[in-house]
Image 1 (tube, rainbow, N blue to C red):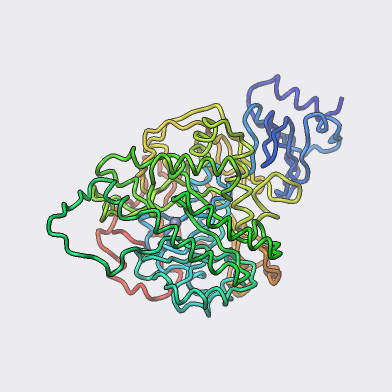
Image 2: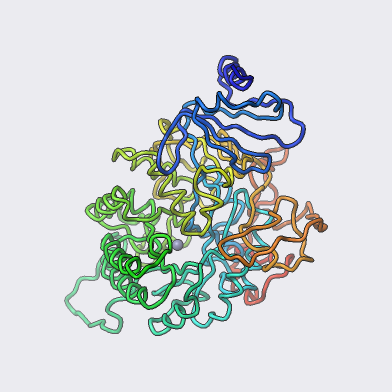
Length: 583
Ligand SMILES: [Zn+2]
């Protein structure tokens, strides 16, 4: 009997505590154990061995663990989850953090803490609704400078495509964006205009042959210029969800998907459709994919992919009460038949990934009018439980969950050799998930900034118990570990020159799919942060409360600083702190 086996047995017998540590010399290796190790293709009783650098070095069944010899290894840390499922961390490829510029909507601290509590180990930040939007290399620098000391999990970035920014794309690719997001319809954000049909050729040809993804908000306006007077028509009640739903029929999505599909044979670019709501989009994309593959494309899924989101898989339009605009999103939640069809596609593996489209805003932008309320649903903390609640009820497995929430998005982002599954050589991004537990969504457990949610007081099945990023514990038993330890998954060398300070926890190198990324210079002085830094007031985590239990300072300026300050300026590191919005 090996020393390791004796140790594991002793751990079981001594207590139900899930973590024991041998004397540690330096940073130790770790062995994560579970009766339910889940990959994207199977479940088994076994463990995951993680090296000193937080990289998975082996996957073992319970029997093969017993055969391993660790007798001389007194630094091995064994973390036994018992019956909790041991899964790869969730990769959420669609999150709107909104910092800087609209930090009152969401910031990096709050978004990444909520994500950690939800079992997400990597999120990809959308290029809007921050200000400035991520539509140029300079704006990406602003984003990354803002995020770099604030992230509790790993964060990658989408760039944005707007009319006329083609010259910026190459620089952003070299800096490590995973792809570009564009709109085919008004985004609602003036600084992020949509692209017109006649600009698509130019965009596709600019990115032709590159490894990055073009993602589109896939709706086209309908009836433009066709408004007719109607004297006897009743004005529909804007507080009814049906009024909003009627204004965004499925044809808007189908027309846009067909438009994109018409470019797929002409250009070698990965096209991704974000947040599919109308089920009819999927067959359109499948036909385009089939053509691509027939033509010899070796891209993942033929370079034609689609995601849908938790709200389309949880709700149907019939359930949405009048005036409850926390359910408003674009494209809209559709009827029960549409929802059931989306689930059929999931069972048949005809959708490629699931994302949150976490898109928060402040309460004053909502109100009861569906036609004027800001659209967007916040859910980054609950995606794993939301999907499992519905998937379990339909008899799907945890492997299916891992396929859609971790492996699929990692592939989309080009992170499949680093993230998204349990495999030797990948980052030890690990979640212990209790699939049998349930909990109620209440305001006091929500960690993202604006506690507006269509899921409020809903009972969810499956609870995230512990989250590890690269082997480091970031969330346990309701508590987010204080210190931000996340990495930005960018190419620092290309984005910042080497005289820029690099904080100790940032990666020394990062290689996405571009092969032109270089290691970063090390041993550079890190500037210390002022303790009295007033900018922290909108992002202070709860465990920095002072002895009186109060967070200081908490006041907000009741102004619109986007209008008050000149926000066209690229923010220097100090002045940007003033720009955080307090609408
Ligand atoms: Zn979005």
